[in-house]
Length: 214
Image (tube, rainbow, N blue to C red; front, side, top):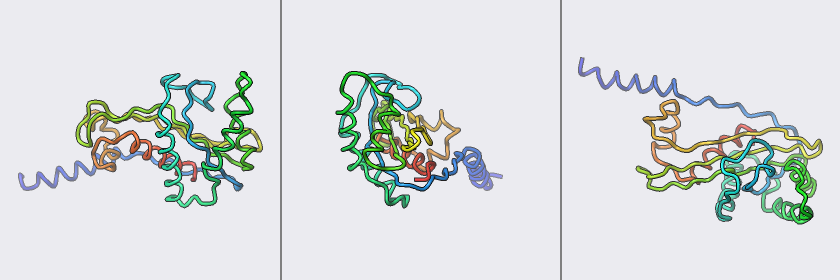
């Protein structure tokens, strides 16, 4: 009986992972047209959001975090084969122009703002990534005092029809496997280690962009 114990353990492990496998959402069918990617923004107030609410209103992140995430988005789009999109480096100029033109003190809605940015860029659809929460890991790959946490949204705005076409949401503060067995496959997929906030954001962006067909 003892000699069958390792085999039994392996079979139980496979069964557990199969039962805990995450359900992948199939990508949407994106309409044809010119697509642009906005630079990652970090809303500080609920009125700046296209949907949902902020976990911690008024709390911002360093500028270098947004620059890092811009690079991550560009890298993932290239890996996914999503070519021909107007890059965030070009779109950020329009973000600055629209922000400057709306400094009278009265707030336009988030949707109105991004529609104006899309018209400035001259695109049909605008991809808008937003970082809502960022908590950096305190510790190492194999032990932490505080785990990383990230909340992000990615939207596609239909500029011509002034509407939100699609949204994907990612919210994760990493937990140990012993208290997160429902996501055991995710832990093994990521090497069983504690991720940095940047690595966690990359994982979430990868999933969301694929689900949006990008």
